[in-house]
Length: 370
Length: 89
Image (cartoon, rainbow over all chains, first blue to last red):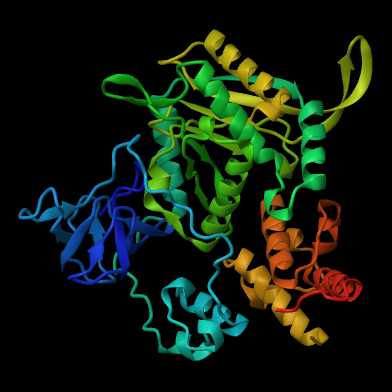
């Protein structure tokens, strides 16, 4: 059972997607596991053959427990391999990009029924027109078995992680209000001509700016453990995304500093859609090396965020608002946003934090370079 | 496509974008944003899905016409009427 977060103690196996004898490739989804973060796709991290499934669907098992035995890779043909745990932060991940627009075909009635019963439509086989899932298909599906011992509630998980953060991490907070005139103009120009699939939202440019700043100013991208601060090899920006129902996850946009903002936007859209559907990959939840949170649509001026351990920094974005702003000695209306940083004082000081925020401001002012 | 079919299809597409919404609780007249946490990313995903399904162009400035189920159905109907070869699924 992989750990999908520092506070996960157990998970419930919902469904196997493979059976003994199946040949699996690195990155294949082999099981669905229910956690307090929702139902998560569990991937396999090597090419292998499934030998034996050790856990029955419906069982709640602790993190680290062996779920299945694999064997038959070219490298280790004789030793059964154990599938457990997660890849270390920074390893090459499978590329989690499902084909865009390949949604489950399901009738509204069937979808409503599946939802009421807690069945994931993606796990059903459709017998309707063009493979669409019908009400009958839902009715035929055995109900997901809930574990006798309920997993800790969503609130408990957030409480535990945030309490640990406030207990262990000496936070310092800085904020900077940044002029977004250039960014807004760029967005407007881009979106007026771009195909609907390529249209951008400010969030993608925020992620791009934070990633570029994290590359330019060291000390904000990585993890803090017993050995102190370890900078991460790649810049994987976790984006806090709330799902209806109180779940809050921060899946990672991998190597965000090396991708154009249009690519980040596509990935962000895909991630948001999958968070809503409860289809985030486990690896995506454990790979972030820095986090971005945006409450811009809620009318908030400044976010004072709490670092997600074991990371060492989180950047908050408030609302984009039009305010009187002094430009070249004259007061003019300008779009601005207040960017805030919570930094880990064990790793960096306020001066480094100020440079980091300055680098974000500069990146926001030059969106065309993202 | 008659109005009831069109609305059923638009609702289906909405639920693809927001699968965690309980369809039974949806009020077709009330903006999605006032009923659920429905943000700009959801709106964009909804617009993309409508565009792909009905083959109508939806400029960014028209997103405000997609605020509720009733508004979205009206908007798509008007767009389909305006495009003589507008595709239907």
